[in-house]
Amino acid sequence: MRLLPGMLSRRRLLFDSAAAAVAVAALRYDRVSAADLPTRITALSASQLSDAIRNGQVSCVETMQAYLERIQRLNPVHNAIVSMLDDDVCLARAERADDELASGSYRGWLHGIPHAVKDLADARGLPTSNGSPIFAGAMPDADDLHIARIREAGAIFIGKTNVPEFGMGSQSYNTVFGVTRNAYDAELTAGGSSGGAAVGMATQMLPTADGSDMMGSLRNPAAFNNVIGFRPSQGRVPRTPDDLFYNQLSTNGPMGRNVGDTIRLFGTMAGFDPRAPMMMRDELAGYGSYRPAALAGLRIGWLGDLDGHLAMEPGVAELCEQALRELESHGVRSENLLPDFDMDRLWRTWVTLRHWSHAGRQPMLEDPAQRQLLKPEMIFEIEGSLGLSAADIHEASVSRAQWYTTLHALFERFDLLAIPSAQVFPFPASVHWPREIAGRTMDTYHRWMEVVIGASLAGTPAVNVPVGFDARGRPMGMQLIGPYGSDQAVLEAALAYELVTEHLERRPPGID
Image (cartoon, rainbow, N blue to C red; front, side, top):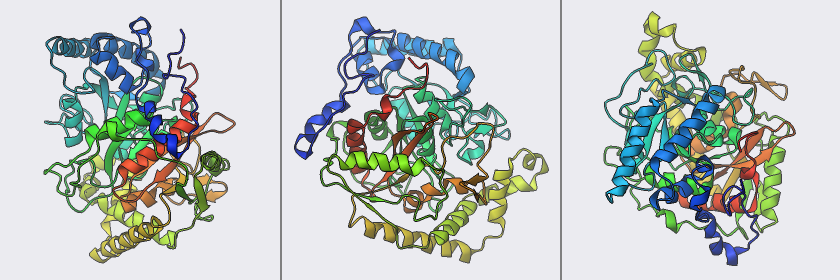
């Protein structure tokens, strides 16, 4: 079947600042003809699919049938989607969505589009296991706040996406559902904790996906599967935690096969809710307001491996640097940069606050039946919270504040900071976490993902953009980090990046 204009084969666009506004066409892919549907439904971007459904070029039932067929074929290999509803239930919901359209009722841009919710979030009618046998089969009473917004926009929930136990560790495996396997090589890890979400999109089993990010959980799996993952500014997307005030390390956010879809889902998930009191209250720009950033004169500070502080597998930084050189050919000015901060202190700050975030799970260690169901990494986190004093937490909080002010000062000189999205390429799915990188021993199960903690601690927006593949075909990505609150600017930079690179055009083997 021929490729559709502007669909799977994207033009390589070369533009300067004067032409940048014209490139907004990248957000609005060419309209597809009815003759090409529904056989290519799963290849459509979420935005294309949304237009096709609203314009009557494809029905919600046809869409659901296409996605269910693909899930049945590929999910046994990749194990991205779990707790799937029966096909007849999904199809009945799609039929209702068609009936709504026929009666003139349109719920939103996700109307009739299949969606699987990350298995750390609650969605009414679907179990939330958190990847743990302790909670397997637990049914929530209501949607989490951000999930309710996705449902209200018309999405049809079909299941959940797989995660590590309690989201701990950037490797999506658990004893309830097993391991999620990389979209490009099923022998390799998908990353995590939004691993199922990233693989579901990369294999075209899902049009788009929600996720969450404490320690790179939107950025790492996006890098490992060649998709887009966006960690918004802290307070952009509502959270539904037990602790509304103090524990502010993680945030919910969107993922997409391309930047435009990511922006669109971000607009659905984000925005103030009085039930989440630490949220930002400024008005968010609408989807149509986004324009690719003008690359000429854009200033990027390249953090690299933080002058050797981070152990990094050979080839990771080199791919990122190649991507930066590509941007420089379009007028971007990049400069090597090392923040004026003790990076060992930053790691200690992270470990303290992360341990503290698990203090509420201490009763699990006291219950022998529950303790034996916890993986060692989870026990490590909870045990780490046992000896923390108020002074320890205060010191870490002060250090976190000083780190924020350090980055804030850097953004007086740079528009964006760039750093790899992981320190290693995807590794075998049978390995829980890398014990060493480039000859350096990893002293904890998450030290190999230290590269992501800068944005997490500062609460700043960070988007993963793909930078290509190594000689073995393993994907990698790079974080673009902006000042706090600059979510639109970061995503507009990612839009411009997508326009002048071709990495998203490389699909997993056999995908077409």
